[in-house]
Image (tube, rainbow, N blue to C red):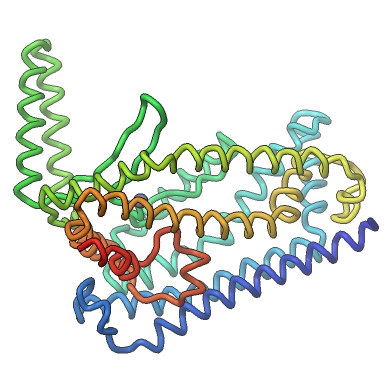
Length: 396
Ligand SMILES: [Zn+2]
């Protein structure tokens, strides 16, 4: 294929994916915008007041998302149309030659550092707006400007050192409340203590204290004081942090446990592992094929074939439509698995308890429990709580 044809094909694909994503986001926005009043079917999950709060937050987030999404799309366009990849590559070559001499590896390191610094700098105004205007307005911002700056400098330094951008950071926690992982003899089910009610948390704390006291008997006195200090410090931190408690009782926690055991019994973790390994193998195969194609490099303005540029082109441009498709299929599969795990718990007799547990879980994340069906199908790996509860109705 001609290099120019490749270039325009890739650009068109990037535009199509952008339009698709934007359309999805707009559909979800429309649902959130039009449902001014809380719909009756979610009255169990969310109070009127919480609904209004979550809705106002979501609407702001949608608009912010439209702007950042469009901006990053335009940025990609600029990179491609203005030939910024070969431009920065040759600058990196000049820098590395001055410092180290001619070396593709060193040039790649300079290139990765340079582009990651530029990307961070461009992203900072957006992050500042998100943290100190949107999150602040809705009462979620816990950062000070000083912390924000320190945090960012740290992230850049770390990413320069280990050469991989640190994406996750001090964003508001989005972890799930319970999950299972591991295989064969190393299975673990993690249940966060935020699930528990006040009394149960106290019980657990007492148990841990007792265990610690037991251990402390065998330890040297110095170690003990250090441990004690650490514990005190930790509980202080816990007190200052505003933990949202879900207040589940024992039986509801058991129902959640039943759901997680369902994932294990039904081979979900193993199948997920096999699928993701197969996907990785396929992606590496694609890379192995494409990164030797001279026309691919020519399409982006490169006369040489640096491996790092091959990685960027193949994994960011060529495989983009494939990745979109895979993530869509993975979401569909994950939703099926969630329903199956719910069914497993329900068949053990926990349908009613799991429903009430889900109601409490739904209250934790400040999400709005109304979704555009298509958006939800593409983006949410967990089915909406009202749907999960409806599926369990027949077991009650
Ligand atoms: Zn699950």
